[in-house]
Length: 94
Image (cartoon, rainbow, N blue to C red; front, side):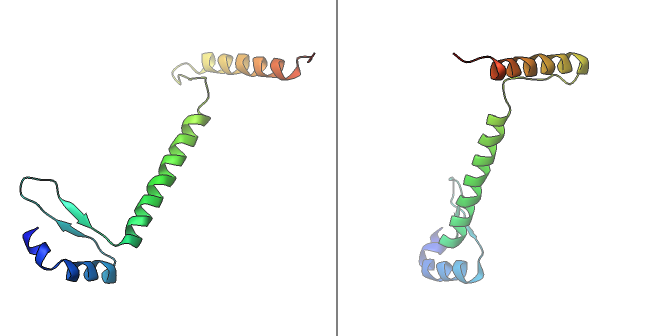
């Protein structure tokens, strides 16, 4: 880190020109990564997309949890749930 302080502007140029990251090590503390703003935006964008996909999968999971060890029971549960859903949809509305 001490060396990086002396050459911070040069390191910033190196990071932006070569599209690489530079890891700054610090005694007794966590390391730090120096990246260009463009690279950082890309990382943030990917993280946001990942979180959205994760939430979407979780919301699509539904309320039925199937145990694949007993396929026949799982099929019966699905049929019952499907029948209940159909009944709700086809029930006469007042």
